[in-house]
Length: 134
Length: 284
Ligand SMILES: Cc1cc2nc3c(=O)[nH]c(=O)nc-3n(C[C@H](O)[C@H](O)[C@H](O)COP(=O)(O)OP(=O)(O)OC[C@H]3O[C@@H](n4cnc5c(N)ncnc54)[C@H](O)[C@@H]3O)c2cc1C
Image 1: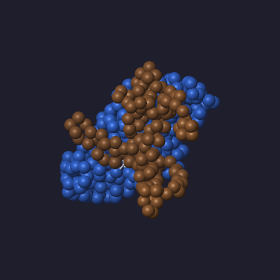
Image 2: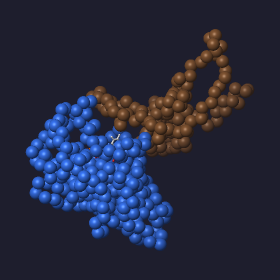
Image 3: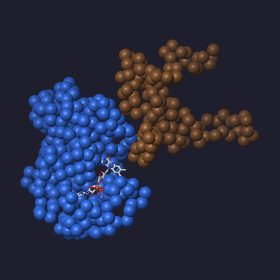
């Protein structure tokens, strides 16, 4: 679980295969590709859910990629949320310090990346739980 | 991933090492801790026929006092510099920088002299050495000469050490009682800095009376931020005063563009890191 979380967080913040104009991989070593170590990640609290699957006889579910899949959007959305006051709606992964800085400084408080999907956050959108309860 | 085959003399004195270098000319390269040279050899960015190991030369290791200077042998490991009580007392800035250099394994192999001789503009020791006005003792077949820090760093991976010469020791003037801090900005721990700032200050009754500031990775060599130093002298060690002096940190710089940031981006963290480094050094 911890490895999956670290992998997902790393995709959001660090790991990137960068190619130059001639198609050469320029982040071709771990020094440039940026794998995290334990010094870079946080302390995780892992808990269990006990909802059995209804689609197989054992009631089992996949678990290996749970941390990987969820942690990437969680971190990217947290970064975007932290700077949305500057009009930022999207930052390409990995969210490098330079990309965050450029997003903040991209324009007059309206720094949405060109071609970006709809905002990850909407000011007046109802809270999902409330919506579900209605 | 495998280096080209090379001969491997392991001299036990500086004299023998110089003789080996003289014999093989530009076919030879010296190896200290190997933490920068071995990756270079493995990627075959360089393929010397002879690799002269300095590891067996006892006279190149150790730290001693010599009047108003500390003398650090070129082969002293990062680990030993980091943990030396004399360095802590008289050149705290080096401790602060070594503490953030790579990881413990690399600090046990890599050497103080090797890192400075390698002259990577992203290396963590150039800016502190420059800020403290280090002197570099270089031995050649004709004897020894001493080069000031301002003349030592020539360009990207290039120093005043000529072919056939060895860096034997680094002399650091004593900065006893000065506060110091190395503010390093990285994306992951144990990485070379995107930008880093080395600051040492003397504070008398809340006023900065003297200051030394060096910048890492803001040009092809370490850079001394002299206009920041001048602006700090006589100022109170407060956030506002230090911030206004630190705003000059980009003067005279020529930062690189690489995977960790474009040149114009690097100009943004430089003053921020300078402010933080100076305030931390001043204990404010
Ligand atoms: C994974 C990793 C992370 C690292 N992270 C950092 C970091 O965060 N910050 C940082 O500053 N450094 C970092 N380093 C590099 C480290 O500081 C090395 O110790 C240093 O750059 C080279 O020192 P060395 O003793 O290993 O020298 P070597 O690799 O043996 O030699 C380096 C070069 O200097 C020459 N040389 C060495 N000694 C002498 C001498 N006495 N006279 C003349 N020429 C000499 C060699 O010929 C060679 O060209 C890292 C290294 C690795 C592998």
